[in-house]
Length: 576
Image (tube, rainbow, N blue to C red; front, side, top):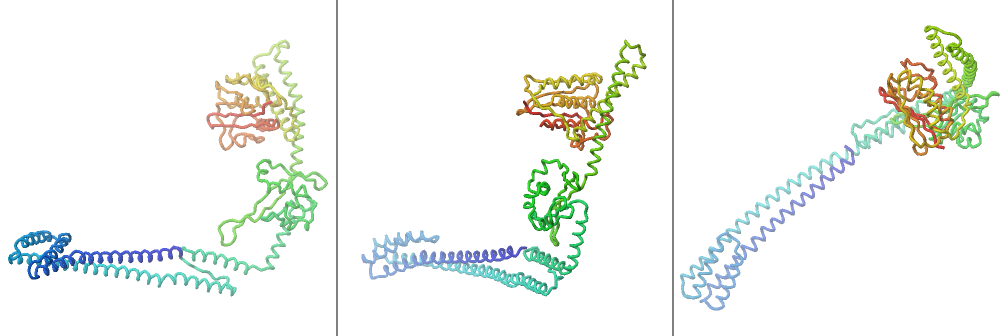
């Protein structure tokens, strides 16, 4: 229990007992006062009235004065009847006195009146004795309960007197002794309080401090300096640029490679706020921008950093690594700074350029012979050149399908090389939504008929013009419908719909095929990605190219898929 809670509990209990003792004493005192007042007011007055009536009766003869005195006290008695049977005696006394006034010399009546007064006085004397007994019992009970309460209060106070000072003083004494040990450089000293109170928390804090002091004592300054030199040498020998910042974004270190590519010197950077350096250095500004703008990391796609180094353009991948440590004796981690690491990917970038150029060259060179093959197949299918048998027709049909597939692949590869090289030729202008959709439907009609798939078109009128490259947007829509046909079952239906929403036009293609598993939804727009286990043909480039084409026009493309029930691809472009 907490010390504060103990004090509150003990003092509160004493306060309650004192209040109880006071209330108990007051109650019994009031009760005794009431009993005493009852005796004085009721019974004592009756005795006095009876005595006055006896004096008036015993005077020589019944005179007007004695009669008046008797009647006055009799009337008072009639208004002071408090005991059982007292009313009957008083009524009898009144009756006899009335008779006596008519027969003043009747000694019998006088004797009866004497007896009546004696009986009344006896009755009240007995009542006084009874009430005195009650008051005595009340006094005894009051003394008992006040004594019991007082003893309990004493025991509680005595227990607190014995225990509370020790509970507070002993831990303080032990803590004082431990602090003296620490002052004497005995950092191995520890305190062990089992109580879960303020002293327990104080012991934990003291032990944590002692542990840290012990670590500092056991560590050698020479050893620390040697380790510092070793780490600095290690960082400087890293072939990639490395920049270290503390929690306040001051530069802790920049290795030689980082200094070289930034054109800075160590004395210009070490210990300086990085924002001050960034004001005069474009490279440093680009490296630390996301540290000051939380939205930058979300907005940017982490494109490689292009830097002119080694007399050529070099490419680096930037990685900002937050450094968190858990101090000795503590549980929560502490942020102490960031390390900015640049990895040189120039060789990989050059290989990527070479690959792109190679694919572009090969794809371009392949288009001509493939087109020639298609032309030759068309000529062979023309009966004016000559008749062919059914087997030859089947072979020509296979050649034609393969040529179309090769032409589609080479077209996708050429588009991909445009995307990778940044040479996408986009001409955004007001275009007809109806023309885009009709062109896509015409291009996919044959493929849909081969699987007996119905293309359901929802094209409300009128529709606004859309800001788009008509050719590229039609290509994207054709690709989405082709994919829907490819992954739909025979005799199914595909819904192509267009609607406007807040000055934007939404093209949607919905199929009822297998759908996309949730773990692959975020990857289907990646280049060369194909859903594992699929048996359908394709290069994995169509959706990636579609995404690049649409985003180059200022639009977006997204997918909503219910695995096992189909998918909906939506292209959103701005109205003209």
